[in-house]
Image (tube, rainbow, N blue to C red):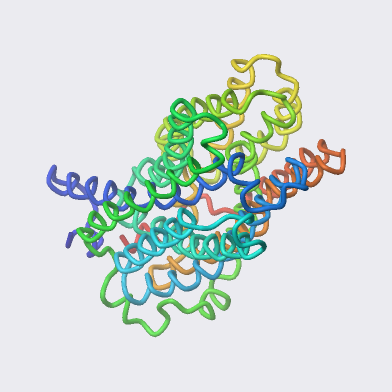
Length: 436
């Protein structure tokens, strides 16, 4: 894909567009598998939590400790973002993408084969933690490399639309995780799901990772050879010296963005069960439908950003998120109908789409090619580990302390910060317009 690497702009031939679309599909396929493997943990927690923690714990406590393991996996993301960011900026985006999907495959196989607490005691949750750390490392590297690749391969003037496919596949991974759980719920009873059924999604994830690996090996490199060989390639010192404001801005809006994203996606299943008092199967069905709607929203909000600008999209996201979180969470928690709960969740997800559809491109446009994957990956990883990864744990902990509504206000405060930080975004994006 020479035209991609050389940064050709202007009129694109049909063949050039076809090649770029295939490249986006190939890169995104691995992204989908990575996030399926990572999120299937959250959606199967309701069945395997008792297998890894003592039965003397209450259900909420078992969910809480499982969520803490989920959160610790997030702590590996900054390390993954740093490690794979350096690989992507020095060895190429393709190399980084291939290695990350192999690591995710290994982590999923580990979880699928783990013995239970009843079999090996406290070694079981420790091994589960190790497997999640491997997956966290992989996903941490995945985000920065994929965001960078999609932004560089996209057509000028349509970058919001093209980059939205990162979250189409990210959400698609979540959706497939819920779908697999849904199918298993129709085939197996709850006792079977707790005994062995929860392992099946992890096996599926490991197998599909092999397919993604084969597709990613066909990718063409988007980084220029000169950028890869630059003395500044993959240098965090360069980011801190020359692009500190951009890095801190990424940290600021990713903190609130990831927090509200995980609140209305992965945590929502447990919220519907523990607060709205809905059956597990009903909560799964609602998650399935709302995630599908959410996935379909991404390209449209991406196209909207191409029209109104990334800065306006982010400011709208911050303002609406700050105004809507408390009333939406309160209404969902007291919704007596699955349909009402589903509609309210979709409203929240529409607000979040203002952020997720352009998340990749907003970050990528703030860094030059030599440090793009590193800047995106580390900035995202740190904020996501602290705020996104802890969303479930904080929410469940505050619920356990009988002050659940405090969590809603916590999310609201973070969204106010997102709005303020978004005002710092440039009105006209810079680096990608000259690099690619």
